[in-house]
Image 1: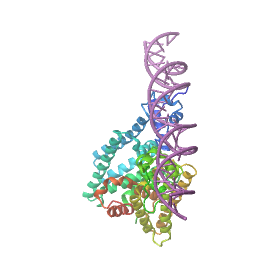
Image 2: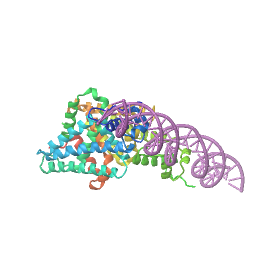
Image 3: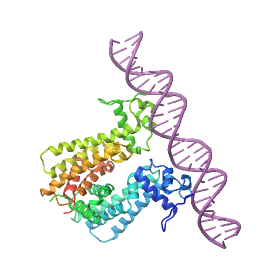
Image 4: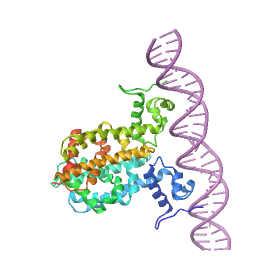
Length: 196
Length: 196
DNA sequence: ACACAAAACTAACGGTTATTAGTTTTTTGG
DNA sequence: CCAAAAAACTAATAACCGTTAGTTTTGTGT
């Protein structure tokens, strides 16, 4: 009879969710079975249900935990007195850090949110939309104060969020460049471009 | 007894593949059933097999058709005599155009390639890797000729490809900005940055 | 109009799915 | 050390999956 290993300060539910994030990232949510998840946890599938309510609940937990962390950081950044470019830089760095430190979870939230059931799907999309709008507000502020070029704020948000999200492809090249160098170069490109 | 509607110059296989792209984009490959696909085509599930070999063959067809189109364009761009920034701009425009004109197919190739079976999965990844390396070569050339800042070429490739890919989120905002304006602003941001 | 091919149908196959019920083992607290 | 709670197990369920076989209908070329 196997036992679920729990990390320090973590419940068994957390352990299952973490393994779920890894599995869902590798295979996709719909293509992952509870039996596979149970295997990776080291237990029979039915035993999982002593700790979680359903398969979809795991996905829900992953998606909203990630979404809430981004929202929290944005809350803090908005309150700090800093110019628009500084705020943007702060958020870009946070996105990169989240991507590198919570890879599985962020990846799953980015890719598998479509498999959420209503009303969670709608909630998730609303939250993301609101996040994007607040980001656009920061850029608008920078434009009106003259520190940012007059570009459509939503286009800028799109590019920045997509670029940091693209770090999911970075794993492979990790060796060739240090993490700090990566962050600096991304920030530099996204803010200042690449042409001389 | 229903009949599959075929577009002009298209086989029934093409019609099924196209509906498949739409379905796989909306629900994901693994979460889409052949019965659902048959419904959207207007036929019974078993009838599909008169035209296609398997479910996975549809995905394969979508992914490699898209990949080959991008590779073809890169072949052409490489042969034109143009500086690195001009080549990059050309490719960025092509990516944006593909994303807007073949949304379902490009989206599926971007998101569902993980569900490909071997050896197709490895082939697909090799092709993508090769594409990225050739893009990095263009940037390296621009750096050595002085037209592009000295940034890690792979970081630049990452940002550009991710940004154009991010257009999958654009659909929603389509109303507020014209397509040509969108392209110009994206090219401008990716090449020249946003700071004044 | 008739023969042949193409493409639809119905029915069924073995396999997998998430989840539940009921039981047994393990852990915990007094 | 014993009782109660937690967490594991086995077994089974009904639903759904991709795909095949066999049959019938539809379209086509002469």
